[in-house]
Image 1 (cartoon, one colour):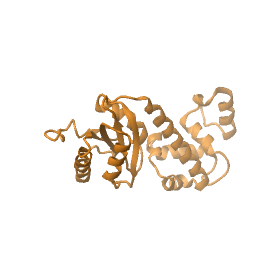
Image 2: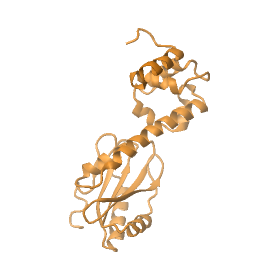
Image 3: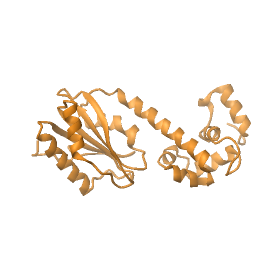
Image 4: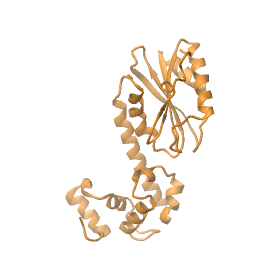
Length: 228
């Protein structure tokens, strides 16, 4: 461990000599924030920025471009680079989660979607389409909304299910607030989609709310009891 922060040049030399995995979070951030600009030297700025988010990259990743720009007076260029890097990390996790090809429990769905949507600062609503063996046919983002809600068109969910010749559907969305508990609108959407897909002999197996912490399964909580 270094006794004092490295200069911007020393951080780059460390990366070249030892690889990115040898760098601390602060040093990795300073690579992204290199060059002159608002906020001072990149290493100092990176340290202050991490402190601002209590040392948590996950907290930082939940910020919008505007929020990143205002943090420590980053400026638009640095904020854009940081936002792009965080999004690439999220997409990498999402790509790694696509290896699941069959759903057996709600945990399988959570493992697939948590890397994709749990840390987002806005709501996203997805539909997972399955065949008769519960193998994944496709997953589709239905809508993207604000901090507390997103508009869901149940007709689009049904249309995609019919196109994919799906036997079943699982709904998934996130709560940026961190609370896993469903709202009345969540319950209403679940009911509407269940009724709509049933007209085509397609089953709604579950609706799962994903957060970085606890998650919520409508099926596990008894919502579908007596409805199947």
